[in-house]
Image 1: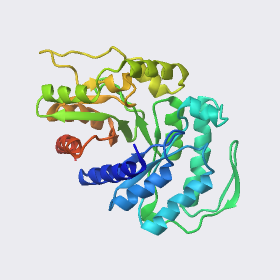
Image 2 (image 1 turned 180 degrees about the vertical axis):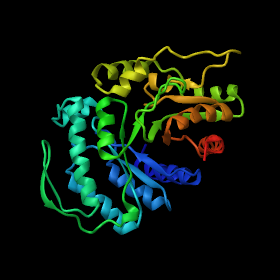
Image 3 (image 1 turned 120 degrees about the vertical axis):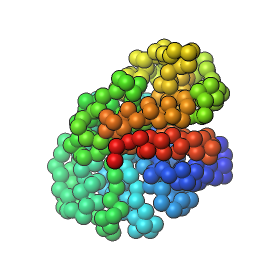
Length: 320
């Protein structure tokens, strides 16, 4: 979309998200989109409390720059941000940047990187002589108020990602299996990346879902090409389930749906059905320890209102 429309859209979706009760909003980062920090500031200026969850690609900037941006935003706007620490990304993006670091080593690098960032934000004088980064008596100005200290998330779909999240105290985020098959990644809390389409009837929910994400032959071809070059564990895990959609008794499809992922329209599974049924499915993840849900990009305010209704049902059914 053009420049003016993009700015309006970011502000609009931020306000929708805040009104629907969301804690934060994910700001993506890759070689083909705008700088996430500039988008983050646009979100902050357009909302009152919504916390941008900024995707951090270590290849793009030194960890000191990340800490400086967090504390600068806190100083200027008095607002908290979250950090979504990336270890990978699109493989061709990394190769274009001259980064051929293997998958598991990228998580080791991200762990070093994040320790520097968090140490600086805690007000420490940071010294680290690591494999990937070396700093000596590094300190941050201005200091970040304690109440604005960022939450941290990272992918927890692979053993390397989960180990990194545990080492950092970050929330590991999964691209989940169907609720009845998912297992908690560890004993603590975790996050789930999932889309939701819910309506009063399952038939209406599926009509909306299929209109939004119709079969797309070119998208399917692009998806298969992406599979061949990706070393992402979550991408491989979701791709292995293709053609795995279950039709339940009465001819209604099971809520867990990979159609948008298979057509290269988004990168997460969807739950589709009545508000009550989708809430029950999400409740299974909650019972396993899921405390954070990262939703897909909402197409409208109405859609977020339906999602908010689902999560109210989840909260009402959850143990205190």
